[in-house]
Length: 104
Image 1: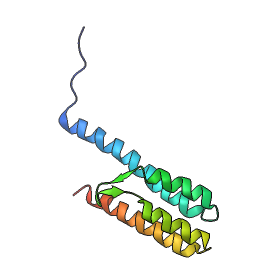
Image 2: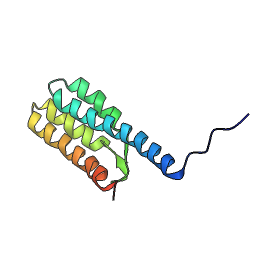
Image 3: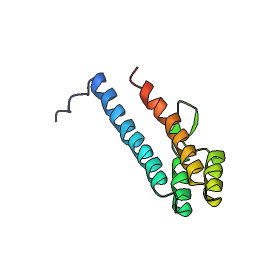
């Protein structure tokens, strides 16, 4: 029986980037979903917990750390959707910043 040819190093690296990209897009989608549902704090909380499981290597921390999650949820409890949106945008910028430098 013949074995399939080994993947070229460039091809292997490309596959890893695609897997990372899929995960990256999912995190960005979750941040967008949280922004769209600020009127539903329970849903936002679940999303933020999920985002806390994703790692942002640029800042060496979760995409949404516990302190940020608490601050976002407290803003929603006060009815301050603008502040919650601002905090989500900050987390997105910190994460997207990593994405911008990945190709360099």
